[in-house]
Length: 439
Image 1 (cartoon, rainbow, N blue to C red):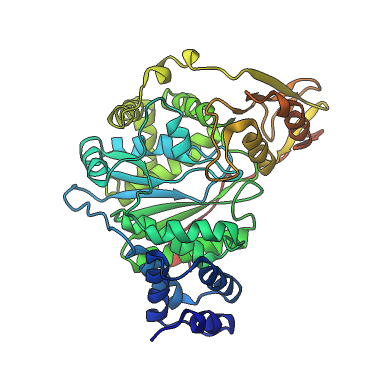
Image 2: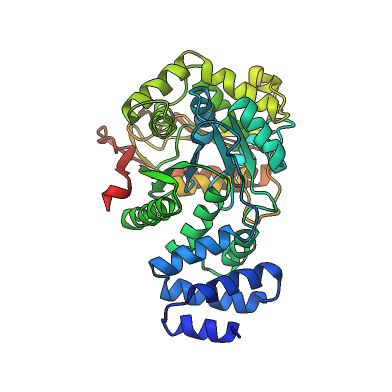
């Protein structure tokens, strides 16, 4: 007879857990027979002692089989998804999914909500009036088959163990464990029925994994886990030392995505999106190489095919496209204020973490999972790293309905910008490409 007490003690003392012990824990906690206090103790022991390769695999598999596995075999083609570890202004999925779907690759995308300083794809999409992200699996499959892409939230039946465990990790300081993160991400991705996956692992001040070596190790474990489950997995390590694009905040970011789909938009957002889309088009067997996949992605963007596909996705998920086409009619924030440059010169750096945290205090994000989001709130960045600025010129503009926070936010953002007299060397946007042969 397995005992939770003995399992906690075993991991606390640094021993390797057997497969049946890990499976017992996941089943027991999901069903409610193992209480929070015992699961918290085990998570802390796992956090401190780590999990070896086999334990990590079994943990992922146990999470995966705690709920429903989506069967997409009736949908023709290689099903490919993208996962980002999250960052400030990371709206890539919203442009990427329609590009890849327009290339003929089915994109089943189960996304998350924002928590803390990083924004969530679902929150951005829900700033489009009536857009539905809470779909049943049958609806998800039907839209995927008809339109080629569908972006939804985690359902009650997909990896329920992870939903329960993640909530506990969030309040017990056990989030930053690479094996636990790997299990959480990959169980959900494998459960959605995909054949291949492209990872965007961000590193830098605004990233979840700020240290490069940690981000690379996470990429390694995610790739090897994906491949072990038969999901062809590639990864890019990308720069999150400053916000991606120029908009931070849900509706502001949707508008920036429309700019890109209309043929404009910021170059950093375009470059990362094209790179990830190219890899997905290659994995989806619609291009013979990643480079040719990138070329195809550029063509679909410039021809307007991706824009039309996005509007098709919005319509299929009940969204009202009126405001996407007439953005000036969208409700405006009650207050706005510019953040002015302190000196002449060039912007050296904008601290992505500070931008993310201040966006939350404006109403654009949430600190607790039940916080309400204001879709209008956020920050527009006028001058990014490497761009010239004169003293007194706006570097950013903030938008909010919360008058009380305006002055403190503007002051914090002024301090988040550093300047120098000469033009700084540009930092790379993409640090490294990784696959199973990289390790």
